[in-house]
Amino acid sequence: MESQHTATIKKLTEQFIANFPEKRGGPRQIGREAEYPVVTDEGYAADVQAMWPLLLEAGDLKPIYEGNDLIVGLEGPDFTYSLEVGWGTMEVITGPCQDLHKLAEVHEAAMLRLRQAADKLGYHILGYGIQPRTPGELSLMSPKSRYKVLHDVIGPAWLHFTSTASDQVHIDINRTEIPVVHNVSNLLTPAVIALCANSPICGGASSGFHSAREGLMGEIHAAECRHGIPVGPIHEMSDWIEQLCDQKHLIHRENGQYLPQKGAFNNYLETHGPDFDAFLFHEHYIWNSARLRSAHGTVEFRAACQQPHHETMVVSAISLGIVEASQTLMTWLQKERGDKLWSTMRTYGHDVMRQGLAATEPIDNFLTTVLTQAQQALEQRGFKEEVFLEPLWNRLKEKKNPAQQALDAFDEGDVKALVKLRSHKTPQER
Image 1 (cartoon, rainbow, N blue to C red):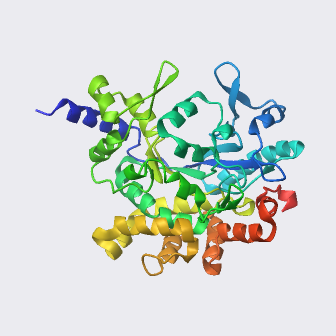
Image 2 (image 1 turned 30 degrees about the horizontal axis):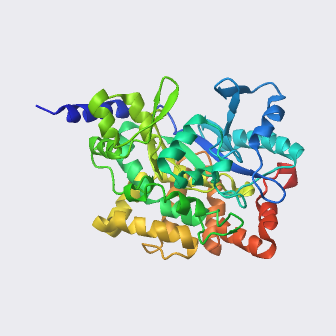
Image 3 (image 1 turned 60 degrees about the vertical axis):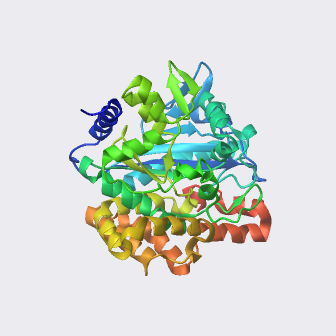
């Protein structure tokens, strides 16, 4: 006879998997959550909430409120603007779309409106992965009630979320793909960081990282691998759900209130049984590089910095290519590294955060192989989406990622030069 705990984990596993379709009805759809630092001419964080009235003028966006008067986002038919953990960061949510061209079109429309609002206020929207001058600190934290609770339970490391800006991509997957897509997407996180790192300057100085965003965020409960690449792969889904439940229970939502917690989430399950909504809220605050999103039936890529304005689709493209080629890539990785695969890629991940494309590749022609497989997978989709990978091929050829460009600009002209380099341009200005 199975124990109550085993029955609870089994039930949660069944509910988690059930939200992923057995089969897809067509091509994979893609969604994007793109975060952008918004700054003044001097590079200090600018309050994105000042843009709400300007963005509302067209009349097609609906305010999203927390409480009676705090606007935390604006929702429209094609895209949503959202206040992030820091009040100096705007998130632009687009999709799901059937192909990358449509996603790019919708995102560009959202960015044009955002840029026009920023121009009127004298702000700059940066294609960059972190606030360049204002450090992550309590005074930068948005006034959403749950953020105070998370700061109380996590401590100072939580405040890194107030300054960082990622480019997160959601890609739909079916039930049978879950283990291989999860595993290969996390294992190839270092490839994405090496090619896309774009946050070396923060707090007005060089951080020592190419991706300070990933390096600093890795401080959050590092021993538990709560952020970044998980400690190991998925074999059985019930084992994975068990691992998530073993993690510290940081925050619980009940009757619209956010309550700090102690101990592991398993402690909550002992009292309340298989509370699936509570589980989803708990695992939302586990920030692995590629995480399964049961609520959407997707895998979410989280490790990339926001990209330069003229190369804004590269993260979506490589992420989609990795998912489409996941089985081929997994077979290749296992053949090359076998039992040492997971530890090898975790080590390489730490190296690329600091060294970018200069880090020694863990397998001969590693990055070339990843890009080749991703490109072939995109070509097979038949939408000509492979064009969005071209900037990554150029970066690899030149051995220069956006972080190195940002460092060059900073060395020549401090933060103001970096702001000029990374300021988002309208199509007419490019």
